[in-house]
Image 1 (tube, rainbow, N blue to C red):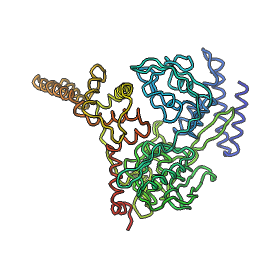
Image 2 (image 1 turned 180 degrees about the vertical axis):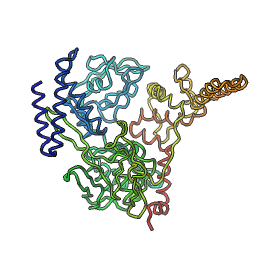
Image 3 (image 1 turned 90 degrees about the vertical axis):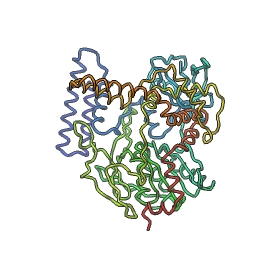
Image 4 (image 1 turned 45 degrees about the horizontal axis):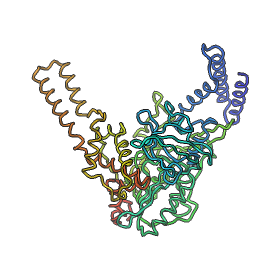
Length: 543
């Protein structure tokens, strides 16, 4: 207890170097209050308490009151922290998921130990180094799989339809690529998928674009969908592939003058003229928004897809005592037009929740060619593509892992399939899937069913006559009869997901990307605009 008081006192003194006298008093007072509360709980609480857990909950509660991006990492969480910063860890190179309270291999990454050993999606993990995985959490299983590079791992799995199998795998340093796929499309259009901004992302994009140009690419599609961001300087490096040296890409403004920084491109570009389309969605965030937003502000690329996430905050990592780490929001970033794309205001919460910037507080800025853009709402694409929501039956099939399970069964029964861009789930295979579902549970309620149920309740509450109630019951029966045809009605939607899930079992990252090409509405718009350079020039505001 005395040790904690000394530590807190030292922390309080540390605040004096950058706090006013009033602020220092407030900090010192509250640390003293915290010490008193901790002392009373530690000495008087009816049950034994764990000091480390108490303080950790206090730290987490404090940081949770700020924003979701300011986090504390204990010494035990050091590997998680390093993976977030570097994208590197030591393990066997696979993701796992929970299905029916079992830990299941989800995606062995191609070229890494799990894939090389022969693990397949759908394999049920029974034991790791003779430790039963039953009742273990996903995190506990991942921790067992991780370890020092060069160390061995015994893995026992149950492969559906095949039985139990034992694997001995040597852990390696795992560094997944930022650009898992780059290839050619029609009309001499090059395409590359960027999934993260860990160290080296800029070089990976530069090399991918160079390779695509070597294969004849006359224009480029950069796909940032689902990319939650990463290192700011890598975002600048990626933009630098397409814009000249010395161009301001992003500036940051924080509480202290040393956090007010300007990031310009430092290298010679690869190609400042090649037509460029960037695809974004609501999961494109942070560094992805710097890339997309700056290319839009500089009128260097056409943006296609949906409104981005809206994260305009900058985090810095700090090393703390006892090998702990902290990631803390220190500034906001602004892209070339001067706009801040941050959507939620964490400094002015309502009932404990951050609220979106009010429309009345949003400002209009202008791209280099004079096109209007708005701040405070993420990045809006130049060509917005609205996607239909998945049907209720499809959502249920996904939620119950039935498409995943069918693909597992299919992979275990078929050694190979056609290449992704030639593969198609035909009618015969779809009927196999329908038969597979015959003894499976996947209950769901359609919106129409909900409305009819509400109508029944209201009619009874308002005492409508029996004739009307009878008609509502008939309507209910018609709705349920129509629902029985949902598998047929939404066949094409379900087939797309079957193709995706099956193709990734054989072709991994390449399969996941290429199998979607023929059904990708965003990509279709990108190909259309890049195939009409006059239209592209007009959209970018070129006179």
